[in-house]
Length: 316
Image 1 (cartoon, rainbow, N blue to C red):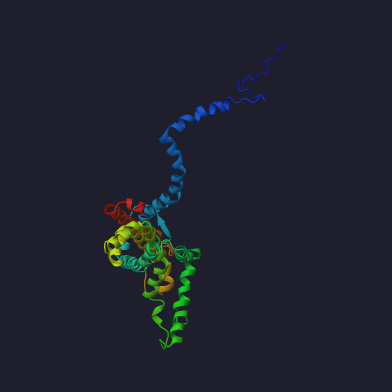
Image 2: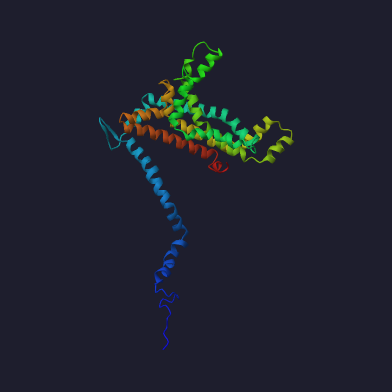
């Protein structure tokens, strides 16, 4: 008598494993896959969770603490504008305007020194084998500690430092230049060295995308190199220059290391005030100042978006 050896599941598999669950699985998942909105939500949910935990939650804490009621040994959650009043009714608001002034100065210095470098690498030597090593020189310092990079300026600018020693040896000066270190000059030089790459790289990327045919057309029409820079290179590299300016300015808003190490108390920025408030356990005051700086930075970005549009970011 013949026996039917076919698998009862109809799968044709002789192992006896029931594949009905696996056969039903696609039917369960298919609605999730076909729903574009649901699929997109599931994809962005992990990233939104990370943003909420590490970005939005700390920001919310800053604004909540900024209106907390200060206590002798801490603070009590509540609502008061005393912390904001302590900012506007003291020297701190003057420090804030000093920070803005230094930010503008750093942007100007970064443009003066960064534009020629970006132009050289992005236009004149864009196809040269030395372009990448040149850009690498400005990236290598980021592989070291920011504090160590700042401290290295002390050994360079100090009375017994490298720079003064060279000038004394060459007979240019008779005594060390004391104003090189622990001065406004030292702070500005240290910040320029730190933030110059943030101007160079966006400007370089923007200039490297300028079509060679446009540059050749300018030369064929009789345009001098300076005229080409003014009427062709600068307008087409505006997106990169703007992004670099924002990077530099926002960086100065949060700068606290360079003024402390190189300023010698002669210059103070708003981030230093925040750091001092945190160290003295005045978290509500520190949060209020941080909220003001944050709102100012957001207003700056919104003004940029209103004038130029966020599309400038994609033009680099």
